[in-house]
Image (cartoon, rainbow, N blue to C red; front, side, top):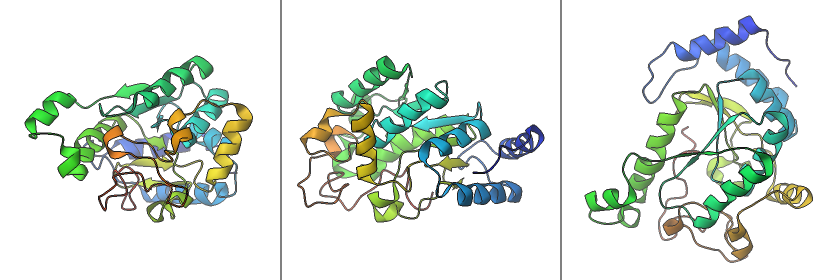
Length: 261
């Protein structure tokens, strides 16, 4: 476990992050920061998620956020955050297409843990967006739909932070198999921390069951990976965990966690 840097070292790295263009990509990492992240990643590779979360909340105190779609991994991290740093900023990309069940988890999380997740929305409503595009764009160009209603929002949100946490696991897909615990996110110009990268699906669900953590009830109906309602379906027992996303398209990621990030 890496020790917490002294305040001077912390301030230096944060200043290096902020002294760059604020547009996407927001920043480039200094050599000293990349070295620090590599050392932290190596030290945290065998750490348990709460230890990783504690490091992140201390190292990036006041400049850390978390993105969640209220999947089981995100709910697990929120459970730990409630014990370690409940004031950490957390947001959800409210595209306007999410399941009602997904948004209901937000209310249950707040009631259970006192964590209020900010709903970050596109500037254009679903109705106006579909009007401008002659219908739902997710049917004809899902990549553009994700770019407009997810990526544009997260670029905007992350301009106000130096680091973000995600709930991705390496065993979810080939695209996520190389995810570090801690690393530099080139796409968004911030540090990215994935506390559950080296955990398995079974470990996550064992935690949820043991600690009675709120989760999306759609998981009990065959939905293993849940995104926007029009682009998500339930799967059969022999399908890949993310097979229910963008069914009928070659698309497997919305772009938040693609390997080039």
